[in-house]
Amino acid sequence: MAMRTIDIIRAAVGGLWRQKARTALTLLGVAVGSCALAFSLSLGLGLRSLIDNQFRSRDDFWWVTVYPANRGQATIDEKDISPEKVAVKGEMPEERRLRLRGRLIRDYRQMHSSPDIKLITPERVALLKALPDVEEVQIFRTRFGKIGLGDTLTEGQTYAGRLDTFKPALDDRLIRGRLATAADEVTVTELLLYQLGLRTDVELDGALGKTVRVTLGKSEFQKAGALANILTPGSGDLEDEITRSQSQTLTKIADQLPQKIDHFDLTPAEKALVKLVMKRKRSTAATPEPQELSAVAEFRIVGVLRETSKDEEVFDPLNSHTMVANQMRLFLTTDGGEVLFGQFPELATFGQTHADVKVRPGGDLPAVVDGIKADGMDCYSSLKFYQSVKREVTLISAGLNLFALISLLVAAIGITNTLFTSVLERTREIGIWKSLGARDSQILLMFLSEGTALGFLGGGLGLLLGWLLSIPGDGFVRRLIQQQSAEPIQSSTVFEFPLWLCLGTVGFAVLITTGAALYPARRASRVQPVEALRYE
Image (tube, one colour):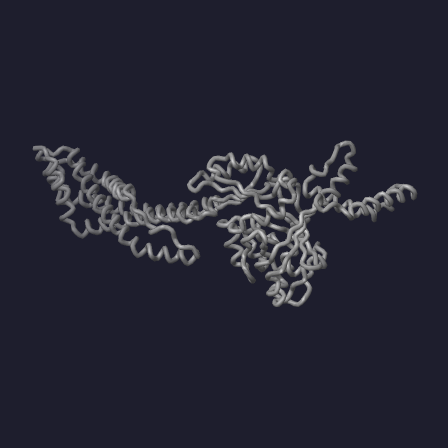
């Protein structure tokens, strides 16, 4: 008489029920492994979702700052800088003195190590706008110029553009007043005020409301261009073709030339002639037409920023404008920039050093970044940090999943041992079934059913335990994350249990336990009825 399916199920359940303690312990092992697997998978999914929400919900995540790829790095050692170039004089707190000196050192390195750079021209702006998912491209302009307060004059770098892109960084640095919001307002740094003669705390307080005069000149490029034309006769007007670093180098040569004439291989008459020509050039250049050589505008100081320390000048992956902000002396709004830079129409064709690219929220940010780099430019964006964080979370989750799999494998070994022992204990019973007509395949199926049942029950119980543990675990993990971030968490939970995870956890547990039951089941199916009936 062949065994019916219902008989196979009853025999399987009966075999497990007779050894309640052993079955319960084996079931507990499967449940623990399944719980660990469900818990780690859920946490990994939740954390990746949280990272997506935290980054993608930020407006500045979709802004990319574009800059020349070959702008270079500072290489000058501090001991090679003349002490008077970075000396800080006057009465002030020592903390401020150290900040100002550190900034002077970094500025000196920057000004004396810039290579030739590929600027962002109108043609490149058009290419940026043509990239998929790009909503807008905004040029923000920076330029060194003369800054005056009363009769005092100094040099510094001016920024004009969207100040809200700097806002997280600049808000922390404000020590007086606020950020500029109108076209006639400006926010300045304490180093700029120091260079303009305002050094005490009282003088800093009194700086608010004062008017500074900003002058952007073209004379440096004219001087360098003239020397370039002399060195390369017949090449036409090179003034608008030389790069910034070439201009700086040629300007130094032009400035030092009058003192070096006596060292040239010239006759006394030739030297006198050259000196006469250069003297006439200098006297002519002393009264240039202002509208051709400079742009001048006045702005009211509404805020003062402290200088950053070297340790603070670390790239902020969530705000790529931080490094740019650290280099500026004077901050104008976009409208204020038009008042000043608009007086130099040729600057538009000369090109700028930075641009902001706005990607459509939800768009293909990696494709935009790749398109920028394909044009030979480089960029700041949160993308690299975002991908790095997701990669680290994925690796951590993979490690947790591996430990969970090990737990399931240990449970599988327990199932193999349980069913193997069950086969030995039930050898005589197996012989009776076979003598009554049970086939080998039916005996095999009976013991495999026991493994499947353990996997189904253990997997379901483990999934339930994982979900229950996620409730207090969610609060614990959220507190840890919140302690590391000042921003509110955008996700409602850091554990996710989608349908595929629930079915997959139980299914994987069934697969593992059924596989573990295969060897004992095959052994049971091969028992000979005669030998089994004589087994005690």
